[in-house]
Every structure is written in structure tokens, then in C-alpha cells.
Image (cartoon, rainbow, N blue to C red; front, side, top):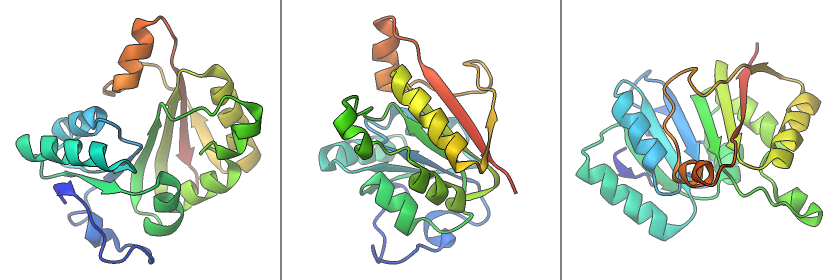
Length: 195
């Protein structure tokens, strides 16, 4: 999977073996941006596989070059829309952790329907997570955080876990570094799929 991951067919559920090596845990980074989070995680956890999802071609090409230069055999990038990947491509019960970090908050009320975190999306997330798998969401936008907490509550099939900054190794994204430098707090939501 190193570098760009190109499915043989974009119109069917993938088989887990197409993405991962054996029974290794799979983590997915939706909207992986410059790939800094994805690559740091791949370096820190060589026993896991990491798939970044990014729709912008320029970003995908840059991240793939960095993955190749760093010789990361456990990281790849899929150029596609995050919602489509979760709802239509990822196989059921295949992902141990799904990360959604600093997405566009679509702050205007008329644009809230464009937000990724919605009840139907959360149901798709639940289907692709293994039992005990986690969905981790982070934003600098407090209202989007509160919206997401309400969506998780409405969905009702996740257990919300504590998530302090020092809870476990979790590198900062480029957006997080920028926003924290501006004095903005980060809002974290950590959900676990229950049986």
C-alpha cells in the first residue's frame, strides 16, 4: 500500500486484504491534508497500517512523495471524497480507528447540511469500525464540536470516552499547530463502537 492507493474498482466494497497486510490494525485519516499526522502515526506504529483519504490531487501527490522518501511501507493515500470512502468503499468491521481532524466546520447555518458529522455518516462509521474501534474527531470550532456531540447522542450507538491531550501518542496536524499558535483551543470527541 505505500504511496497512492488505487482501488481496482471504485464501485464495490473493498476487501480488507486489498488495504491491509493480514490481520494488522487499520487506521484511516479522513482529509489527511499535508500527511504530517498520517506519516508520524505510521512511523510511531509500524505494526499498524494507515490509509489517508484526501480529495485534492496536489496534496495526494505531495504526501505520496513524502511516504516514498520516508520508506513507509504501512502508509498509503486514497484520492477520493471522505464520505464516499466511509459509506461505500471501506469493508464492514475493518477499521480500528477512524480519525477526522480539523475538517471544514461549515459555520453558516445554511451550510450545516454539508458537515461531515451527521447521523447517517456516524452509522456508516459504526459499520466500518471493528467492535471496540474508535472514531476520533477534533476541531477548533466549538459550535461544530457541540453539533457533533449532539449528532453522536442522537445516533446513540457510541460510547463517549475521555480524551485529554496527553491520553496517548497523538501528533498535531498542521491546522492544529497553526490554530494553537493563535491561541485557539482544540475540541476533542472520542467515541468507541459498542457491541
